[in-house]
Image 1 (tube, rainbow, N blue to C red):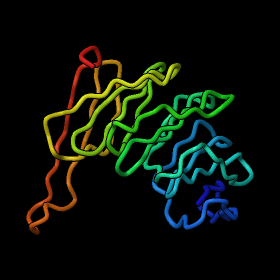
Image 2 (cartoon, helix red, strand yellow):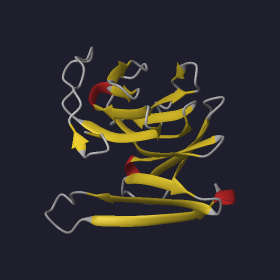
Image 3 (cartoon, rainbow, N blue to C red):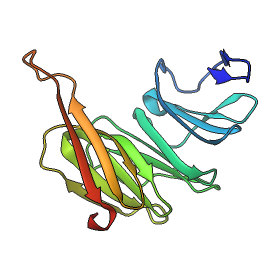
Length: 181
């Protein structure tokens, strides 16, 4: 859906080169003519102000999250078992090797550092310029779903949608000062 100024209107999804894409997960944009949508099987759509166009970014795993700081700094993340990431620097897409990182659910980018969170308490940082990753783990079996930051610190949230025994859902909030990593 796209806000036309008079309300929301359906936007046609182009015929995709990627088969079997039925779901889109997240959206982020830097302007009314620069909006990214991510979804199943590495699907990426870009709204250019007129229409949606498919982008091929070198990932076939589900893309779960997208964030950026402007039209020349965009990060797409996902992967169900192993992490997957695509970085847009305004010229080309690159794919840092995050295979040792479990699936990535959330992303937040400041000017130089990509902060990522994922399955089984996984947290990490990726240098935007080099793609070099630092991986850590929070002592929790709970998957972390989203992260955001300010000048003072980072906040991440997560939870499990099923405990396996029909019991209550489990949730967690994690907070850290920025200088603590």
